[in-house]
Structures are given as C-alpha cells and as structure tokens.
Image (cartoon, rainbow, N blue to C red):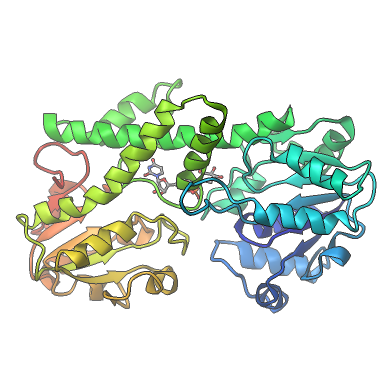
Length: 439
Ligand code: UDX
C-alpha cells in the first residue's frame, strides 16, 4: 500500500516507520523543515527506544521517505493518515483541531477519489464528520474518512505498534474497512484483533480507554493514602486485587500522579465533549481533580520527610521525565514538585538520564547534575520521581555516605524500607504503611 503520514511527531513518526517496516511505501510529511532535514540526516526529533534504527533501515530500503511538501507527499497515496498535534487549548482544555483542519484543507486540493483519509491523532467525537464537511466544502467527492486511534505508550511505542492488544477502526464504508484491513494485514499473523466500529465510536473508544486507565491510577493513589492511615501496604493491595482477572494487575502502581501527553489532555477533552452534550462524567471529573491534587501535594511529602522545613535544605531529585524511557516533560509530576521545592526555599540538584534538555527549558533555578551520584551528593533528602532502571540499582550505602541528611523519598516505590534502612537511610515510600510512607 502507498501511505502518506501527515505530521512526524510522536504518533506519526512511529506509525509511519512501523507501516514502512510492514512493507508499505510510506511518505512522512511535516511543515517543520528542521525536522524533515534532520530525518533525512538520520536525526530523530524525539527520543524513543528502537526508533532511530527502524527509521534508518526503512529509509535505506527506500520504503520510508520524508518531505515538507504536502501535495507531492500525498499525491499517489491510497491512505492518508493525519497525525498532527491536537494540544489542549489554553483555558478551556478543548482539543485544538486547527492543525487537523489546516491539513485537511491543504490535502483537499490534491486528493483523488478512492483515497481513505484516516485520523490517527486523538480527536474529539465528531471530528471525522467535520473532516467530511470540509472536504465537501472544498469540492472533494468519493473520499472515505475513517478513524484509527493509536494506543502507543511512550518508551514502548514500537513494541506496542507491532504487538497491539487490539486495532480499532471506525469507518462508515466497506472500501475504508478494506484498505485499513490491508494496511494492518501483517499484524494478523500476530493474531492482533481488529475491531471495526462506527467512526464516532472509534473516536470515543480512544478517550474512554485513556480515561479508564487514568481512573485506575487515581483510584490506587487514593487507596495508597488510605494504606498510610491504616497501616496497610498498597503494593500488596494492588497485587491482591490485580490477580482478579476482572480487575487486572496493570496500572495499579501508586505514585506521584499521572502525567504525559495523553492522560491529562484526553481526560480534559472527554469532559469538554461531555459538557457540550450535557452529560456529566463525574468519575472522570473527579479523577482529574484527584490527580491535580496529588501532583501538588508531593512537595508536602518531601517536607514531612525533613521534619516540615524545606528552607535551606538540599534536595537531590532523581528523574524528571513523566515516566522512564522518554525525554517527555509534558505534565510531568516533577514540574509542580520541583517548582514548589524551590518556592519553599530548597536547593534542588536534579538528574535525568535523557530529559535534561527539555527540563532546562522549564526549570531555571535548579542545578542539573551530570549523574545520580552528583545529584545526591550533600543532599538532605533524595527524591525518586521517575523510575528509570538505573535508579532501581543504586548503591544505597554509598548514597547514604554521600548525603548530608538521610531521607530517601521514594515516590515510585522502587525500594523496600528494610533495604533502605539497612543502608542507613530513613525510607519514605507511597502507601506503604504508617511508618514507611512519605506523609
Ligand atoms: C498512555 C497510554 O498508555 C497509551 O495507550 C495512550 O496511547 C497514550 O497515553 P503514555 O502517556 O505514553 O501512554 O504512558 P503510560 O505508560 O500509560 O503512563 C502514563 C502516566 O501514568 C505516567 O505518568 C505514569 O507514571 C503513570 N502511571 C502509569 C502510574 O502512575 N501508575 C501506573 O500504574 C501506570
């Protein structure tokens, strides 16, 4: 198949490279000439494990090309995927569709009958209808519009793309379904289920999936608070409930609250859609509030670990990205935490294995350490904010020896209290009984 991918951000580039790897002919299009020049030179605009070699090997085979010129990029495509950004609008949280609309108006000038236009960006329910309307306004006939949401996790995006739990395709005609079936055919060998639905249903499915996962996280975070009050262990509670197939073990890790490019944005956009049609979504609304409070309260845990006072204290922060294996800082729990630490008079030395460059744009009044050892040296408290693998294997004794104080605030429950105490540290985790919790 000949595929055009408009937008070489996270979703577009990963999807484009994976489609090319399936053997399709893919042209990735982006307005940003810096990005396209970089890709021609083998430089990735994002940090994602495995992406560089996948892009390079498919580009070398001639299956993956890049251009800034939309008309030539989509010229002979059988399917045109739209994977441009849909950021939350400032103020109302509504998904900003201006990039989607602009792309559709531009491709309308050159698109041929029989082409399938597919939204891959997360777009509010009804966006497919709007695209159809724009195409009609521009005099385009005989083009199908489908929805094919992505469910990729950053840091594991390529594996998620190649081994998906399911593929969701929302389409209103048989031709669109045939084209998408053909595009995804290589995955059927892996027995990935493909679910055909109406277009609006597919659009909503994406929001419902992310909102449900966000609910799970906020739920376990509240249970963690309860564990701290009644002297129970949230890790064991999560295991105890997760072994029930109806609940499942995933997304039950208590922590500093969810961040990233999807959950915060998509939960807000779902609430906007619900408001617009006058159907309240109380569970999602509460989930968002619980998560906002959670992120804002992490600083109190650090303060509590230091006896309540942060002024003049040195804090070593390990991990800044919203999760491991990414340099993405969007809505990262580290942002309100570090900002509040500084506001309350603490001195922060932070280390993240890859997010330093992104973080330097956000934090101007902290120091960035070259490695974990440098971040913890002389610290009164060390805070693990992101569970990078290298923070799972720290030499705690060495760390204790290098610190000025003794507090280890483990917001990801990477360590056990016993092992931390053996190393001479005072341990504060999340939801780990009365003694071992950072409250
Ligand atoms: C998510 C969805 O998983 C993916 O399907 C969708 O397409 C995009 O959004 P992503 O944002 O990359 O992916 O990260 P994910 O691994 O889902 O984590 C999201 C946030 O939740 C992170 O901040 C993470 O630390 C947090 N989280 C996750 C928890 O706090 N506890 C958990 O148990 C799981």
